[in-house]
Image (cartoon, rainbow, N blue to C red; front, side, top):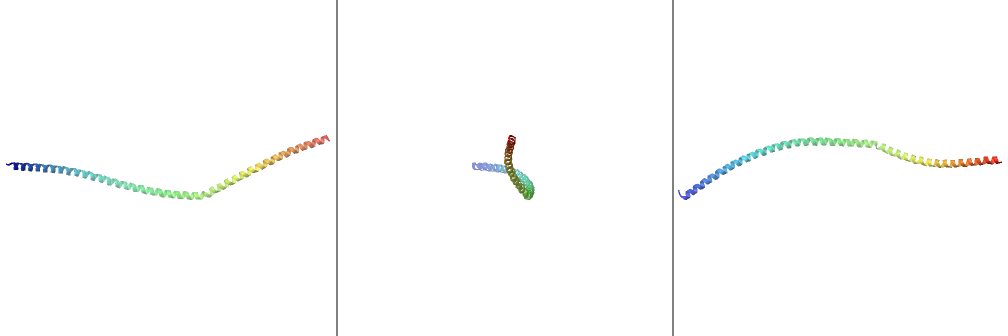
Length: 142
């Protein structure tokens, strides 16, 4: 065998070894990709189930929220109607309060006038008694 043939044989063996290594590598890569694909598929299945459950739960929550909003609006309308019904009562109470205040002011004014009249009457009574005493003394002296 010549040097060229030996070199060709070494190159052929190296090529066969390289092909075997590449085939082994590709088989391992295929196995890793298959396992990864299975894991990704399981994760996607779990994700889809979770999204389905969450969608159902959100739908229920939205329906309940809508019912609560409708009930809240009905209650608000009912309260508004009742407040409108008792508005005249509050107006009457305000008018009564104003009347009581005016009556109180009039009473104070009357009491002041009666008090002044009482002072005048007391003064007149004292002057009258003094005049009566003076007349009685005058009669005794005469």
